[in-house]
Image: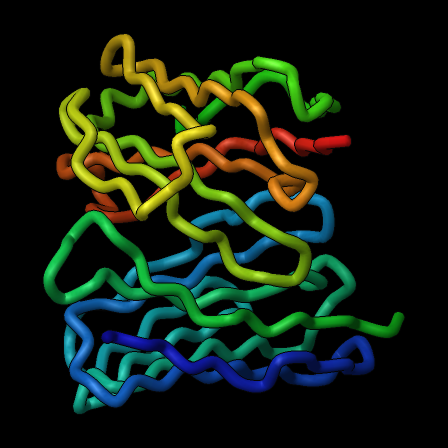
Length: 112
Length: 115
């Protein structure tokens, strides 16, 4: 079945350093979504990408969808302590547009 | 208002108890979801309601019983749970007319402990 692989599992950075998390699939994805979950919190929708090669920015966050629509990345420039949390990518199952297939998440820790 | 509310925030129950989790959204979304999340794992889909009808049941044990009384409300009835059912239970909703079509908006969750 459709799977979304996410790396790295954990990342520890100094405040001010950049951070990137990657999602990969062996199959073409119709879309990719990114969510952030703070410690003790719930997933919060960040963005959805649907077009090949799409790049979207939200302040210090840059989201990319690969040309082949098989990979995506989230890049944070100059991390802050408020960026701490787990970042999940997710994509709707090809055969079922109500079921999200989730990556395992990247847990980001930021040292002040 | 992109808010989904859930009650209670915390629940401790014995294996013989019956309890219910409640979820409410007022965004006009017609798809609502129940997820189970264990620590350091992604959310695991349990049920999906679409237009108040159950459209997906991910082979969830019958001790979990969902209910959608109307388009704004979603319940999860719990009975005879096991300690391994202890987890964070998340409700979410999505709407095809939402500007971010397909985005799922999550409630804060109910942290369930089964003794």
